[in-house]
Amino acid sequence: TPFINYLLYLYPPRFVQLGIGGIWLGITLSLGSLAGFFTSKYAHLGEKYLGVRKTVLIATITPGLLYLALSFITNSVATIILVVTAIGAMQLRKPIFLDYVNRHVASDIRATSLSIVSMITGLYVAGMGVLIGVLADYNISYAFVFMGSLIILGALFIRIDKTHTQGTQVD
Image (cartoon, rainbow, N blue to C red):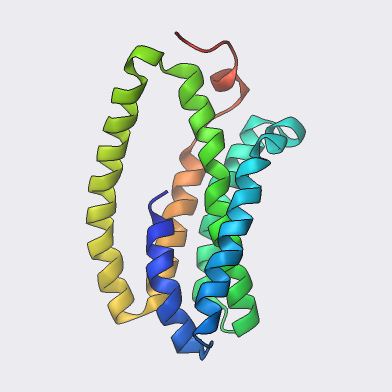
C-alpha cells in the first residue's frame, strides 16, 4: 500500500535518468490515475471470474512485479507504460480489501480499527521511507528492486481465500 507514495516520488528522477521529457510526468500521472479509476471500479469482476484467492494474489503481486520491471527496463516508452500500469494496479486492491474489512469488522469498531491500521501503516511508511530514500540516493533501481521484492514477499504470504470472505456483514 504505501509504496504508491514512493513511486510518485521516484518515477520523476527515473524519467530524468532515462531522458524522458518533463511533460510526460503529468501525462503519466494522469493516465495512471485514469487506470486506477478503472481498476477500482471493476475490481469486483476479478472475484467473479477468477475467485477470491487469484484476485487477491493478482492485486497484491502485480505492483511488485511492475516495480521490479521498473528497476531493469530502460526503454522510455516501456517505463511510462510500467508507471501508468503500476499506479493503476495499486488501486486495484483498495475496493477489494475495504470490502473484506467491511464484511468482517463490526460497524461499532470499524472506525477505530481502520484508524489503528492507518496509524500502523503510517509508522511503517515512515520507517521504510528512510530505507528506500537511502537506496534511491545510492541507485533508484535498487529502491525499485527492494520495493518490488518486499511487495512480492508480502503477496506470497497473504492467504485470503473464499472461506475468509464468505458470510454476511458483521454488525
